[in-house]
Length: 167
Length: 293
Image (cartoon, rainbow over all chains, first blue to last red; front, side, top):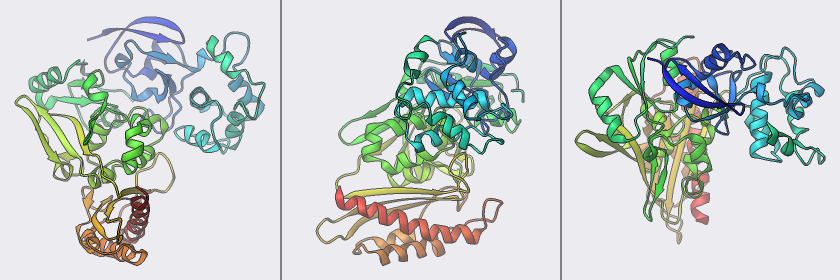
């Protein structure tokens, strides 16, 4: 039986009727057309479906849509405010951290979650923070550099903290 | 991959969850973090007509403590454990287990109750829970019962729990002074890995002459369930701590206590050798901590 849920997705409240056996990843992609969130393995191994749920990065393929009643979800579509790329997205482009691009939305959501939680993450915190996101193209080093460039000590003028408030 | 169709319930209290479990019996499965259950459902390894989510039960998502004990709710996540001050200060081996489970995305969802009920021989929090002598708290229609965690495990994925019961939490006595504990897991890579071997050790020493009063060692991935290394523990009790004593204990654990199998993660011989090394290392670190606590 379908259930009615109310969930905030990228700062917009959605009232939706969902089947209990639908995952959050499928709800985003097939019901809402938010296909930026990718599905790779669908079993929580690859991280392509990473979204931020109530402030924590999670695999959206392992969350039931019905469980998100009352929750706040951020997806890759919520990053840009319409005036161009979010600074993390821009950093990924600048550092060549995107090759085929399939892992990028999940990787960027994990990166955002690291930077939301630590203004100045250590190298290890960055590496651990993306350890659930597989990338078969870049070898991770460029991704690591892109995220490092967004730490406030490597980039003192970085307005990351201010910008993400607007999202 | 599609999930099979099921009815979904989100009870707000333990009582309500037990009533649902009573009503639907083995057709109902309890859902906590979902990092294992949803994968099994997708891969059709298990079936369930009714899914009862426990994540909205407030009593289950808290870490409570008094002077003597900590009670960890079954739905406390790995990330919550890692960030808890009391776990960091008093149960660092458990924190190490929680820090190493899966990867950061999994740790934000996976729960301690799920890790315990899955009863994987390689479970990351299980050796630490065993050396801290965690008590399992089960609640059913007739009330609560407690049991030591070791008797809860009956085999891979098998636990001593009735169909109408619910794991509500784990109770751990806060270690006194002069105690230390450590956990090391060995995998092929650092994250998103199932352990080849994992070991936790706990020691309590006499601060005067450095004698070991109590030693507990738990070995993972070398038997159908995580096991205690009783022969090695016996070899340590009432002996003066030293590097050679820890080496000896590791050798005993390797030869007498563990019964690993060959599989694609590692050979039995390799696992045995690593049990020796990790037992020695966890004991040495536990002893170092016991000296300064």
